[in-house]
Image (tube, rainbow, N blue to C red; front, side, top):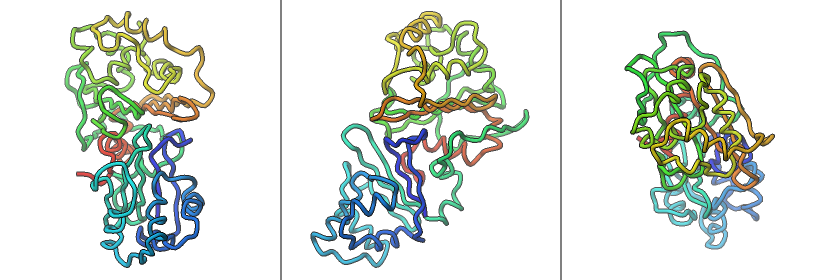
Length: 330
């Protein structure tokens, strides 16, 4: 069975993925029910602290609660005694997975227990969540590949309609598009383009509506330099930005491309932190931007139909990861 913590982890993906020997979620909780030091046991089992998880075991000791004998009993106990910042819907337990959402007063976080059967049968939902090796694979299909996102996306049209698209997934701690980092609104899609086409289209757009694009599209436009046809240098610049919510002052104003890029250039760090990671390929670019020792990393993935077509499970699950905190939702 898998455990995943989606939080301020040291991993470039801002998540911790470990395996435990138990077959079911119920088995794991039963095994830990009467531990003398629940916090230490959880840290040893799951590779570190899990915010709030020890509360259920602490309450079991204080109240002499009996071990749950079924999923229904465990669900009732979790809703009664597991501490979360949120309502009852933030604890979701089914036959094959437990999904919990809360916050640590700084950022939202979620953690998951997912059994092997679910992982094997639902890769379109779970492949990215369970992936923990940097970078994502980079091979791509030939022209003519087909891919449909399967979840809601936000479109920015820079080209006439066509069979291919570029998808932008930025996983960050704060965006003006949302309140919090798990109230998600979905990826951005640029229809009619492949990734090698994107930079030129972004820098050539000076229309009055560019400042109304989704925030990530505006940020990407500001990162592309004049006369630049390759998106790679823009992503390298992203890795040089500081703070957890970087943005040029004029990001919301109808500035020309040259003007907004000038503002962006003024806030770049001279060099990117050694901890930051970039991987720039023809049909996928990946950045894990190191912020600091508290927030760790945020991530930005740009990929097109040709990459998604040959990695459909990763593509679908990554787009879902940017849309719903619960991979089983909808």
